Length: 134
Image (cartoon, rainbow, N blue to C red; front, side):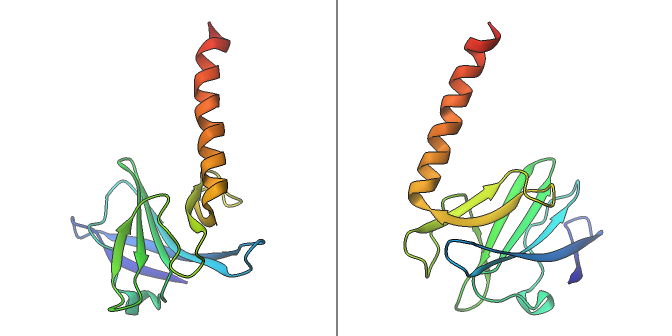
């Protein structure tokens, strides 16, 4: 699905929808994304995108990655960060795969334990790199 939305400067931004099945929990992670040099204040209306509860909207720009989550009621976009808890899967939280199969940042609902493990491994890599180069 593709839709258009305007940013603060009024320029049209293309929006794409995709989904990925989570092999451990089976539900799909559904998200919309847009990439560009301009940032959005808010994603397009959920009705315009045909978005549903728990859908995500990612916007990548030179300023970084912005993430919104579609709330159940009243069905509005809420700005969230990594680690945001899944409202139905009690032990899952939001993570971003830096380079998913599409070559772009992709969201995934993973267990908190896995998120801590990823964070720990990443911290160890950052500590080791300076020692290896010097």
